[in-house]
Image 1: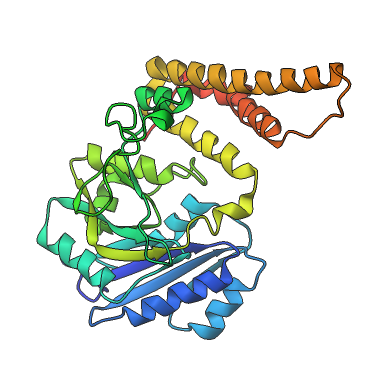
Image 2: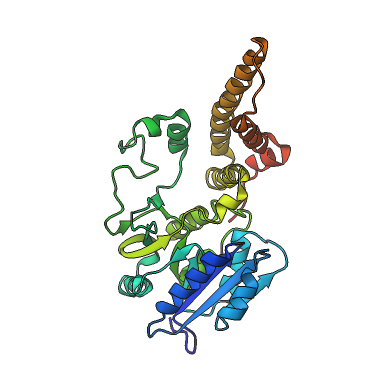
Length: 328
């Protein structure tokens, strides 16, 4: 498929209050310019740290879309993807820096493998040490293994720890289910076929859902070991504080509702309510026992967080879609 007059690559970045990391990311993109025609689109989600002003002043060649409110990660990426003109589309987090040659290797791999719809790089920490960045698609079994602690007790077991791809050092190129959404390179025709990110996942699991839809459509997803990318992990998500884990469960629950439908989702719901509820109850009873023994009360942040997660699962608005799963 030809795109006459359009760039080879569109890089789409959604930013929220990570000005200095965004600056480093854009500088690394400039160093990776190469000979290919390319555009960079930054969607700033109402940052309060001067991110948008920095982009406008220091990177005038970048297309800046400055939102007046935070529309969320999925909606922000979709905004950039709709504006993108490239033959290949990249979703990139602002907390990344690309060594010279990384993006060219990813593009060349897609060009050489027409059956591959998405390529992800090998993520590394700033000191060069590897990051585990790929997972299998979650299932009821992997959820059971995580909640019961069996996956933690047997981290090298391909049976119990299959979700985390136990035993793989992320040191060779291979087909995977869901690479981390920090950097994903796709063919334009893949996005045209399966659609954009589902905006009902504002923060988490939108990339997992996207990968699931891409593989269901018959495309392969490949982790490219020879394409390293520095990733300052959780630089943006840590700004959410205690809310991060609650939003993680909100996204994961919607993913299971969407994938399993009315017949399978109750099993996921029951697993989480049972195990998370039991963990919360143990902490509450422990605190009650302390008070009965005359010991001073103490604030239990984990109990409060467990209660917030349980409210996600027990809210009426959360339970209704169980029987009418979202489309798409």
